[in-house]
Length: 90
Image 1 (cartoon, one colour):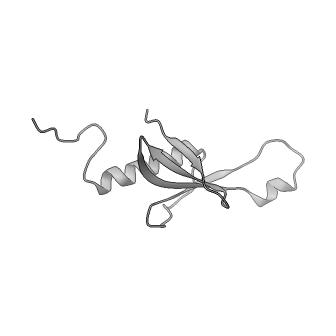
Image 2: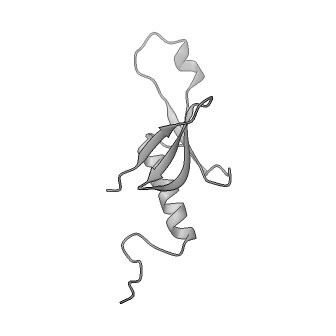
């Protein structure tokens, strides 16, 4: 399991996502507007993942960790590394 750090971005409903000291992108909450009018306490908030270039990844995610995992997978694929299969030099 990968651990991420989240820092709130002022003036937005999103958070910057870091894996260690590396910025991966942002996750933003997409609240269901209908949930504001219901009396139940359960909300159906979903998260979107936004890359460093501002491009939104397709689909919505059920948790911010899932959105952060998608950002991590996108950045590791873009750098040519797969999780756990990076080449070692020695």
